[in-house]
Length: 186
Image (cartoon, rainbow, N blue to C red; front, side):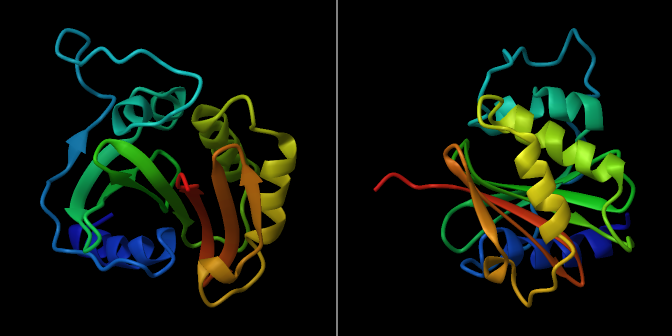
């Protein structure tokens, strides 16, 4: 994926991931391999049952299996940071929104597809299992498969489902989009 498309996609996805609440600031980082570091130089991050931080995410079974590559990151007006990842699934972009190191949202956009494939749904299953293995279920994956084909004008108009400390939305905004947001403590 080219840099220009990445920046355009990044801006559009950040609006989707956070429900149009924050505006992007120009990218600050260049492409950086997350799981491709040599074992001698790679930071050691223990795998956990529940991903809470960017470090956990980058060391997750999901990132190992789908070869996450950090493309860029940029600050948002609300002070959060949006980190864009390329994954091994063709024409797929993943974004992780953080508040400091804490993951507060994730978004996956699938481009150039008439519908999500079995592989795409396996990727969503792996992501949900890595995020929260105790609350991941086939029902969530089925929910994504069905709802990602329903057209909406913005992701927060799509159907949602509670998933542990997260809420997950799936809909079609030209392309299939999955948005996951951490519930904030009240």
